[in-house]
Length: 182
Image (cartoon, rainbow, N blue to C red; front, top):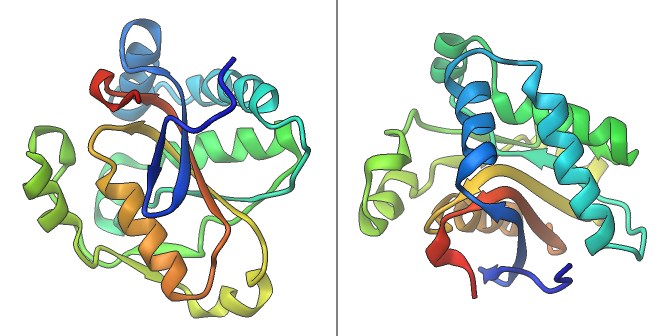
């Protein structure tokens, strides 16, 4: 099991459990697009088991799932990453905060965009909830996401968190595109 990050983005270590293919791809699509909410537990369990092996040091993190814009979340009925993060928090004992960072704009879905289009699409797409800043300052943040392709989402989230003086930030994704492996 590799203990080094798959990537370093914006000075944040990024870990991915597997390549976006096969069963993981089906699980992500089922949870995300076909309302199979029960998959959140299994998704989180696989991620947690992998994370445990990576991090035997038992550091504590605050889990921050990638947020959806409120319009898209209302259309879908839920944020699939919040569901996974809640299950991951139960398994790990980590604290979870789904309100620390939020979407400031309803962006175009990333899957069909080029790297440059993704960067433009997500520029200034996240904001910090100032009510949480004092409570969480100095804590280690673990961003959770389903897939990393170009790294733009994580890069923007890390920049937003760092602008609010959160310096120890890591990211963990269930999967990555094949070209993201070092």
